[in-house]
Amino acid sequence: MRSADDWLALLQEVPDPEIPVLNIVEMGIVRNVDCQENGVLVNITPTYMGCPAMDAIADDIRDKLTPLAQEEGRKLQVDLVYAPAWTTDWLSDGAKAKLEAYGIAPPGKTADKRALNGEAPSVRCPLCKSDRTEMVSLFGSTACKAHYRCHDCSEPFDHFKCI
Image 1: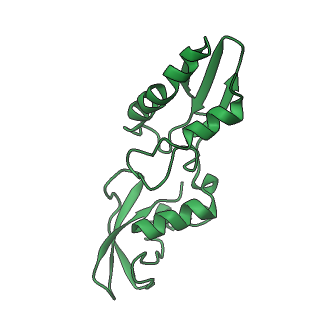
Image 2: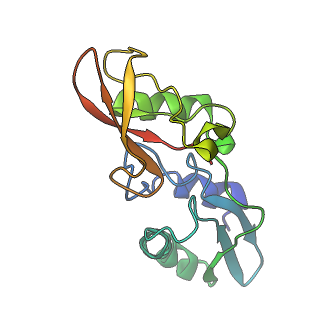
């Protein structure tokens, strides 16, 4: 029978549907995997409250793991948990590097409180690495990203918001 680590390794093959360069384990969406004799429980946490991708992620997990769980005579359960809330601090430096290589400016280490005062955070362009950028919209291609433009290379890009 597979161990919790084995199931977690299999979940590393499930891409995030909105940011396919990262898997759901790298994103910190998979909180834990608990194995019992008769079942496997996967707890997942949304990256953003009301994230529309959570149903798709749960379905992708079921598609990936259900046949394997059935082979072992186990039932698969996927539960959504909200506490503690997901934070961008859970993204590893490697995951942030993958975001930048994909063209999304990664979040900093902690939430930038300037947005609370209506100020845009300073964001480095993931394409040309310039710091001369401006926020175009607080919301980008998804609610967890803001849309920016670089003044040096003139390219638009998304910034993964610090949460």
